Length: 283
Image (cartoon, rainbow, N blue to C red; front, side, top):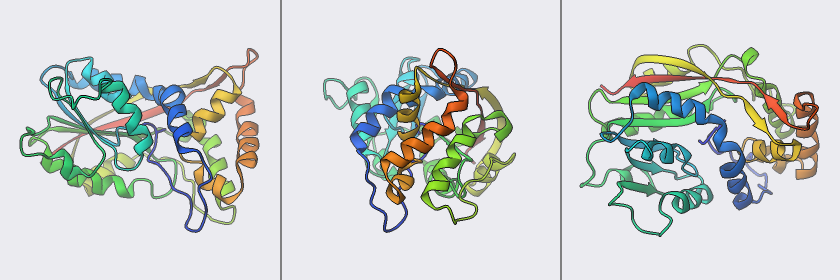
């Protein structure tokens, strides 16, 4: 899950998003974001991210993937137009002194992709979108457009990485995420759907990219206790519409019940998952 595990999902039209977005952003940075660290590390190792890498991360969230790339010597740019609270935490992590970050090659953009294409910025050698698709119907639609817009900012033939949930039978968390759809609109059909085998390839083709390789990585979701598990999953934004349609107490109750089968004797919550990544190339 994601962006960052997923794209921020806003409540349905007419529903009031009764959530504390600053608290959600902190929970994302402190609890949930690290769940996909094995996936990010596997991608960076395969692509040999290092001192010569100029990375553009789309939907950078609170910046963990940027930090991991920067620790390898990469020059990093993060774009996050949808979650300013997460971006503020990324600034605190990557630019703790409030400096622009040019010396270290770090840029954080809270606007559009055009803002990431300043005249003095060289073409990127790697573009990433680490928000997994494949847990709600239509969650890949905006990603194809975003990747199509980002491709001209990269060198010809540069790798573009997108990720998705693996098969539902290998993703324990997928059954828990269905709670969000059920509460947000119980009469709506098709709000949740399992990930399909060619989801990532379909997005790449729609974005005008050429698939060039893929892989799978185990990313278990592990939490110290039930409270951390609830807070971590709520921080993804996938449950905001459910909160707007019902209330926070009801969502917390239903989510806790869905997580109960995954709580171990010591109180920890453990959910094995497999995520898939696709490496495509700009044309």
